[in-house]
Length: 582
Image 1 (cartoon, helix red, strand yellow):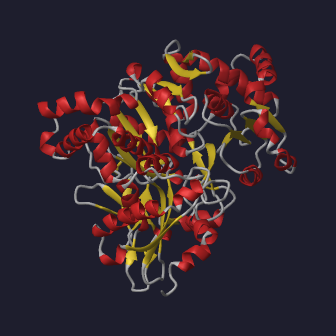
Image 2 (cartoon, rainbow, N blue to C red; image 1 turned 180 degrees about the horizontal axis):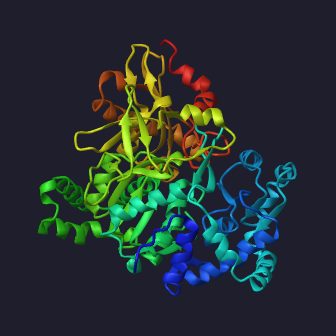
Image 3 (cartoon, helix red, strand yellow; image 1 turned 135 degrees about the vertical axis):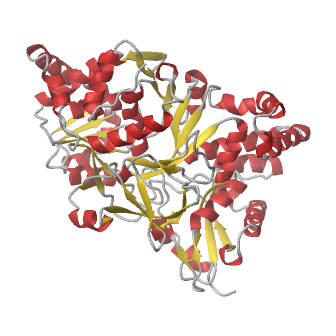
């Protein structure tokens, strides 16, 4: 089955539908799993797109999608492009205030909503929008489809002409940044940006992906740029995209779908690792010892590929692989830093994780680990078309066809983002002698102690999370201070298991987080981490928070990234208490 690369997404979609019309391209589950061929998908998109045209959607109009990940999201997305409009994706986890801002700022004309339940939470916000003309519920869009079918009968080539009318420089989406350090910015991405990414992906994976044999389990938000690339890549690679029922049922979905590839974020593997540790805790001392010995042996590169290692994989590690369905060839991971230890751990288990690096502004990956060029701890080498430059202050600059055209309604921010054609990422890192890129931190997150030492907090935070399944999130603090401190949240599942093992009686989660034995355990994790750090990077004091960070309380973005500024603001008094003289 051929890979398909055309100048635009819409032409690529059209060519895929014509080249492999009867191939199963999609799969979704309501009660049972349902297959959808590329032709059936095309037909659904066509009438919906023409229905949008009947509603008055014109070239350049913005149409928003607010929904969890499901096949209707993908249908709506291509239908919008087929009407020559621009998709504005919105996270289903966004707060009503954030949703109102995005709809208002983008001046979206139409809003696709997953269901009326979601609408009931947004009544006041929607009523305040002057540009919004219609709301389409995904489970009630029959009238829009019927209207589109009428236009298709009178003008059967209208949709195809629209698909072919798109130019590479035309926008396909206004994808808003997560807003970890301020107001979200609308990143305008074009057909050319997306096709440049997909062309490079074909270049580096063409020998390892067999379209007719590949199945993906799609669970990332399609409003995230990685999810967007995954969705568009289906038309290039021709694989089968299976939509997960929910994040809560992900383990069950893995077993039923048995994917060969996945696009993921580090949190999925961090949770998987935590679950493995919890299960190990329930095993006998002998079994834990055997597992630890197998992992330790696997850490010696010389053993990989030997008969002994193959035996370990089949007898000991196979249960881990089965947890991901049993057929997983590799995972592409991005969106946040993944620790080297975790990458190597899952490699030993038999699961290859290819960490990459990119931003919304670069239409996702500009660097990626591959089978041919692989170095755990790095985010890979630059993709074929990409140039990377490290500025004097360590900031990573990018030059590429993948870079966005501009920030929506923010010309001053667009101008500030570039220097002589190089995009300033805001990330700090370095290129090693072999050309692999390493990310050390966000430029705005760097801590400069009162002693003048530069500290990258992400390195320390990842170290702590890797040392214990109890640690859910960590925020390291200490800018302009004498020493570093940390705020920690704990995993409810791991903490409940710890309480069971230690026979701790407790009334609720908040009370348990403050138990002396929990404090002692976290103190031992901090002490272990400090042994691996230079003195100026060690944590001197810490506080365990009684509840997890959340989107609702403002500490997490819709894409579940920690807002350091909001954390510092919410827990100002607690932080100050760690810096008072004893």
